[in-house]
Picture 1 (tube, rainbow over the protein chains, first blue to last red):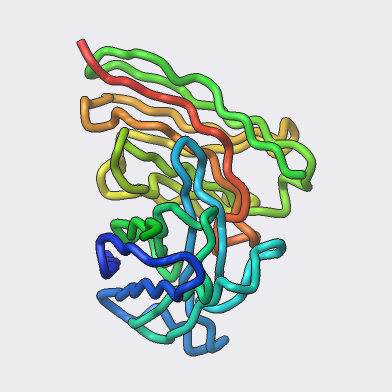
Picture 2 (tube, one colour):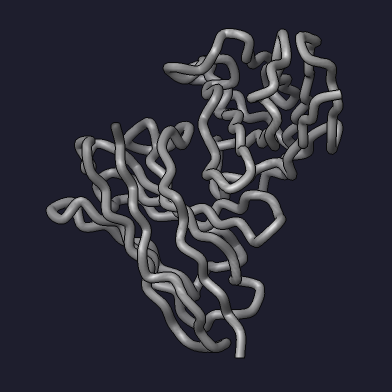
Amino acid sequence: DIVMTQSPDSLVVSLGERATINCKSSQSVLYSSNNKNYLAWYQQKPGQPPKLLIYWASTRESGVPDRFSGSGSGTDFTLTISSLQAEDVAVYYCQQYYSSPFTFGPGTKVDIK
Amino acid sequence: EVQLVESGGGLVQPGRSLRLSCAASRFTFDDYAMHWVRQAPGKGLEWVSGISWNSGARYYADSVKGRFTISRDNAKNSLYLQMNSLRAEDTAFYYCAKDNTRAWGGFDSWGRGTLVTVSS
């Protein structure tokens, strides 16, 4: 099974500042035949289901603000919130869908300073 | 807008069975893979099971393999999860999630979840 890890566990950032969350997979999630990374990012606010932000490691889901961006390849990935807004307070999860079981990372909680 | 509504959760004794359903609407159901994801109260997300658009591929988390069965009825726009031999550690909110491809991609729509509590 592919194990997903995230760092940090929690993050406190001032409004308007950059937030960076790291995700690492125990093996590569890059599929060589199509050069795609099978990696997604989700945002979950309290009392709500998760929301897809990014898929294929860097493709922003429709309707997601452009302050959210994803980068990385192979085993190391990053979610960046370029200018943190109050509504971005949430837990963020990475997930690999390269191979079953489609494992999630443990989550990173983002709060406002 | 895509709508996914889970049902069938509740309180069940250890060792018993439960069947969850997910009613899908406002999209072409048989064009997409579907998944079940669970979340124990206050904990992280755990992928449980996934099924391809035509039921040709079904996958399970190790923690539920042999006890849970995923299925779908494309004529009824419905997804199911048959849960047998339930354990206390299966207690969680169970979410139905739509894949953004026919096989495996990001999960682009989620239901509100149904709570399963396994306790004597």
